Image 1 (cartoon, rainbow, N blue to C red):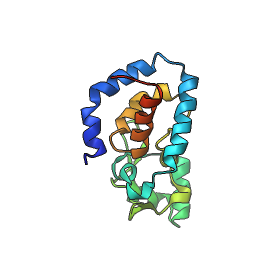
Image 2: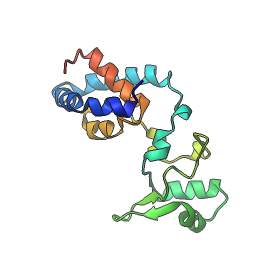
Image 3: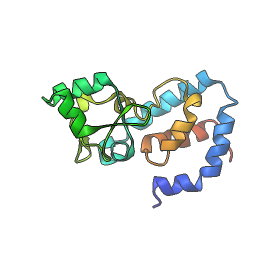
Image 4: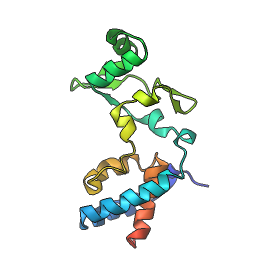
Length: 161
């Protein structure tokens, strides 16, 4: 059975056409459909069987998030930053390792205190789906939730490649 990444590669042109098609539709209607699809699909997928997001995504960290996790880990902010953080070219803080330091056996060891980017991923529940197509399709090949929401959306909209 081909992997999501293999299928995504094969569907590159189809997905480009689908993005163009989506941009012609009503965003609020698409948001409602995506939200429903996400609820159904997310309930069927155990993210701890995958963990691709934690293994492959660069996570941005705010000062508040760094403070919160440092406290959770019983560390000073300075020690937390030295162990887990690097500054990007634009001054933003990012996790300094992939997979994430806090991923153990495909489970987040700081789950209750995880970063906003982690808690929002894969962002299928957020409004303005059509405005986030670039990001959605950047992760389409790694996240079973995104992949299945998009494929079911094609069917629901009767999209023909």
